[in-house]
Length: 81
Image (cartoon, rainbow, N blue to C red; front, side):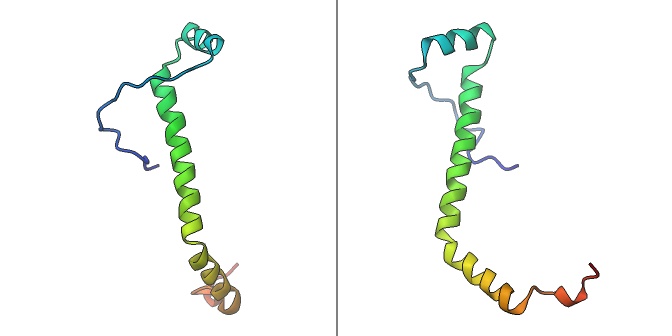
């Protein structure tokens, strides 16, 4: 799967606020906070970009679906199933 960001980009320190109990449990379990945040942010960015793309291309998708509904797909007559 293609990443939605440049994994070679330099790291940038930042401050975040996290529930103290959750943070203590994560540290006790030796969970890498930076890697976990990057993974979660990557998933969210990917999801949001996908939604934006679908919204931006909604008209074209609807037009294609209408075309397929009216005329079928290319090679439809050649398939055996």
